Length: 391
Image 1 (tube, rainbow, N blue to C red):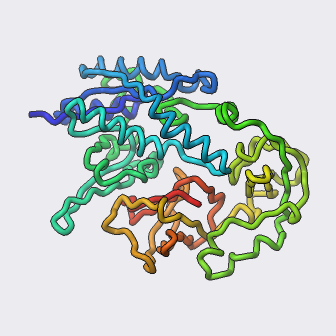
Image 2: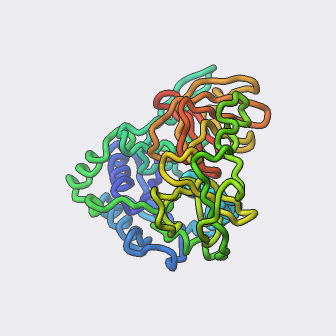
Image 3: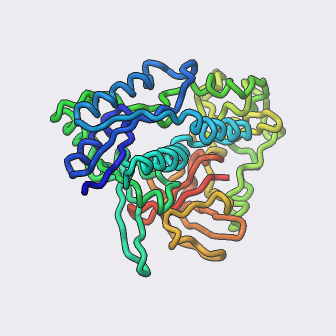
């Protein structure tokens, strides 16, 4: 009897080819489109309109001769993703909705819907791989980087559990993007030349300011420029104390001068350059800190400004997640890994230090734009071992 798999058909080429490959491998394949969003007022319609994507997904399913369904998960998406995003921005943090969408929607709500259809697996068009090892008589699932170094999407799956991985398939993880396009063209797939979506998970590209203004009101405040030689940036960098090394810089208005106004501190993120609308400076201005309590934005001039760089970060214990629970550190232990703090960032050598209050990650070299609310993910070679939300 064939094993059944439900493929999340997004209307793009990657999930289309994933469905084709699974059918070729002899699976009983069902295509399902997730409708996660109803508010088109903040969506850039020409970039990724959900209706067009749904139609393309249906055409792909017809072309492959597989059953097709659409499932409306907009209520769950609002509760688990959108509400969380607003809350995080309100706190002056920058969430990653794509990581959350995978953990909360694709590999939870969507997975449960697939199981109700009698499926053994769900599959997506992620450029990632899964394999297994035996340890202590148990099967351990490993999450590996995709073979295509330019498209590796393992980072977006960094919050998955062993149970979720056991039910997941990533059919295109072993091949390169040009090969995926070539397969789609060879079998005359309608999505063969379709542009990749750059938007939120199964939502589309969103005008973020308009999106946030639905709930976060415009609130004018001061933009403070901090000179590169401000003494505050020296504190903690040479210290061996983990809390000092990983703490955000202690910014205050008296360290700099007001150079303009902004529309609300909750609209800005560390490392941001566009959107400040302040000109006449020798070098570009970057956001180096935000304070939503005082509604203040701190900026620094130039990409080499010391306020943009930090040697480490901290993840509270409650925000730690180990894909490989068998490798979880015990208090007082340390280990060398490589980590990234955003998608597509090259892996960087670091040391993880586990303390009672959480996990400290100290990089061999200072990292640019470490951003609270984002995910740090650590790897052993090609394997993603764990991740956590940056404090």
